[in-house]
Length: 144
Image (cartoon, rainbow, N blue to C red):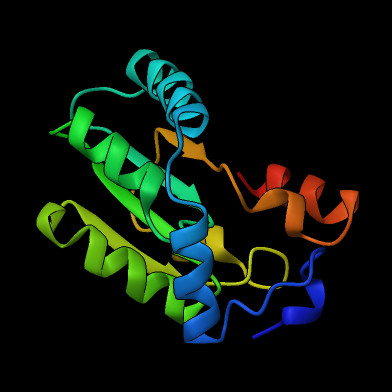
């Protein structure tokens, strides 16, 4: 994949690094507050049988929060890091088959073309600021 696109110095393709990052950034009270804000918006925008796509699912913390609170939606988590997808898959196993995972580079891949079916909301918390440039972020927004 394409680590050069990352704006910060992350090695998310390294399993140990991804595990350590996931542990270090476990949900704090402030992050849970952010998750609740996202959840509030989703509850207004997404029908009971709707579909949410998360760009940069990482270790799956936001997905877990949303899937637990909205028990009838389906969810698609996208990440470019195989280790992060593995971590998310392990954390979210109990939500299968409501969740699917896609590996894609948000900047270089046509990720929007491989998401099956209709999408009611696209969300992200910790990934877009690492895309390397404002133009890359704008491109991702345009694809959403």
